[in-house]
Length: 184
Image (tube, rainbow, N blue to C red; front, side, top):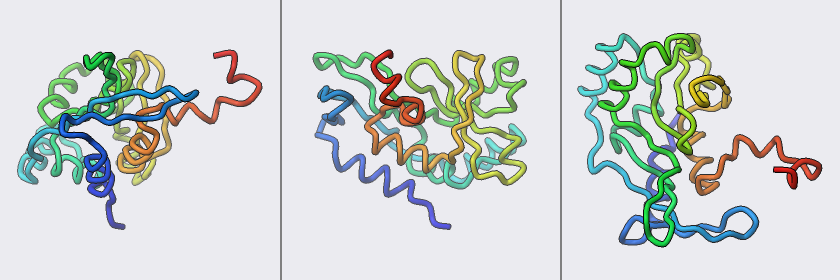
C-alpha cells in the first residue's frame, strides 16, 4: 500500500498564499481565513527509531511518513481580522509527543499516544492496542481528557479528510440530520 500523505500535504501547500493563509467556504456560506504552518524540516528515520525505542512503541507507517516530511504542523488555525486565534489542528513534533507522554496518568487508561490537539478541546491519539493488533483504524479523539471517541481511521485518511473539509469536524457530520441540524 502506498501512502498519499505527501500528496495531501503538497496539495494543501499549493493552495496557500505567500503568508500560509487559505480562504475557505465554510458552513452555511461563511467565508473564513485560516493559517497553515508546517515545520521547516522533517524528522529523520534515526530520530523516529530513537523515539520509538525510548518509548517502547512503534509508530504507524503513514504517520512516520508525515513526520519525515514535517516534524509537526498547525493546520487551519482560525484568523480573525488577520490575527491567529487558534483552533484547528496542532500536530505535535516528536519532542512535543515526548512531553505529552510524560503525563502518563492522562493517557495510561486509554493506552494512547497523543499526536496532536484538535479544535482546542481534543487530543488526537493513536491507540496502542489497536496498533499492536494490526487494526488499521487506530486513530481516536480523547475529548476533555474524558471521552474516548474512535474515529475508525488511520492518520493519512484523517489528514486527507480534514484537509478536504477545510478543518471542519467531519467526524460529527453523520450525527446531523434535517431533524436535529437546526437545534445545534
